[in-house]
Image (cartoon, rainbow, N blue to C red; front, side, top):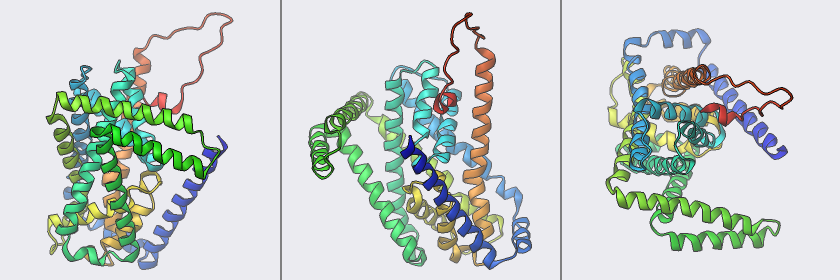
Length: 363
């Protein structure tokens, strides 16, 4: 518990420091009045296009979940899958490294009668699809962005290199676990044995048991893919479309400011690289880091006068506005569940039920 509290404090401190530096960077370049004038100069009719685009972003993941659960024999209505997607986005955005999203989604599914094993398998396949799509976008963007990548700067370039390496390692590992469980098991046991030598206090038996549990989940995923070979391709395709909705947001803002000179694919590719550069950082919603990378990466595209307003509008549309909408969806879903559930009264002398955890309340 103390370790978790320290981790949360450090994470919160890092976010506040990065956000503070972002605010300092913005107002070092322009006054609040200039910033407000630039924001008001944008064509808000074009900015409204971002709303259906981010709705489509959530619906793409919902469609993937809908297809997976149907293949598993525990189909749910699309509207419920959209709710699971909202739960995932909300908790992924507010927790470090997006660690809270998937557990919250599994809890939400279980409340609708979806077995926890099926919910976990759905999340596994969605993660594989998302990581694979991110790698497809990242590798494609290195070519599509052209000379823009050279202007990202050394620090952003370093983050991008690390980000691509992390995504590639995760993607290769997941496919290895999925289709080559034998070598994957030996590799995991070897890493655990090495860790136990370096840190004698490690619970080697416990780690090996957890490794076997994860491998069993991947085996179920491999069996499902063998039964429905087109399923994984469909999930990857939906994840690719999902990321396109988010990556295209800076172009919507670009056109809303009446700018021209850079094409859609150049700006989408640049946003893909910026997202990969911060996607692996253990920060809630990449807060602070995403804003700073945007200010550096898109300086050439928007110019010094508009890069800060463009960052504010882009992040509002593809993160903060969606966070607000999904938060409202969670609150509405919880209220509906409370009103529909019978009010069970505890018997006299009996202790009240324990309060649900934060993730249990998410469902």
